[in-house]
Length: 304
Ligand SMILES: Nc1ncnc2c1ncn2[C@@H]1O[C@H](COP(=O)(O)OP(=O)(O)OP(=O)(O)O)[C@@H](O)[C@H]1O
Ligand SMILES: N[C@@H](CCO)C(=O)O
Image (tube, rainbow, N blue to C red):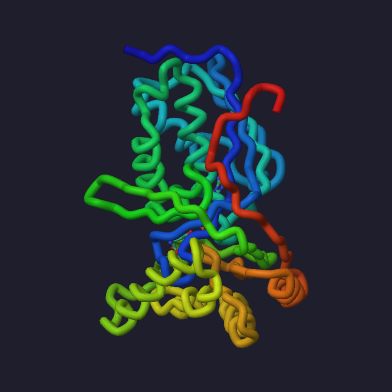
């Protein structure tokens, strides 16, 4: 039976995310205080998409990522609405390693769920996470985009798990965003099919240390953010980012490539490190000091 749809509009807000955080490839992620706002409404026919901000150049048809996620959500919820209006106010830059695609996917799924009466009973939080992971291809951005804060995500067969952790309040993320994009798909294509056991062992140790450093022991963040699994392999796609990470690390700052790049993330711990990170932004790169977003994607009440 076709689902019953809500008559009015639904508004959701979804945070940017930084994945990997150095050695936590495809597992660790952090929600950041930079959000996309999306409003959708079921109408009698057709598909109308309005976009302001990032992504204004994208095709406004069924290929639009938010629409693809909406469609996937409606499918699980029992069927498609007769028509759809979608309005996006996008602030998360695209193709920069700040989780724009995860935000689009999570937003689409949350909108679909909220537009179907009783949608929350059919599509649990765990089901949204699994669907989002399937659409995105890895769980490390979609987990914090859904749960907020610091997350550890993992796959277990078709199932996806995610644990939300409380990040130490001294951790102050600074992102240095370049004026160019790198696609996640292309950056993943640069990774080797296998790595040396010594590199895998080094990354396991650093990823474990990173969870401790981010939650209780930020003094260890420099050692904890060393990676051997992905950043160096991606240098051909983002030489300036790797050069910047190396320069920041040479100055003692815990710097990593954010997600699949090319943004650089510094997990600063005090005002001096924040100022150092901001001052290191080359020419047209845009530095932003962001707080950690405590909430993941959520519905916003009318009028907010
Ligand atoms: N809000 C959005 N609306 C529609 N499409 C989007 C939106 N956000 C992202 N996309 C699509 O996803 C692409 C960017 O995804 P990609 O995975 O390459 O980068 P990212 O998600 O910004 O970075 P990362 O995954 O490394 O954090 C865009 O080029 C666009 O096709
Ligand atoms: N773990 C993913 C994050 C992409 O946002 C990657 O590095 O390819």
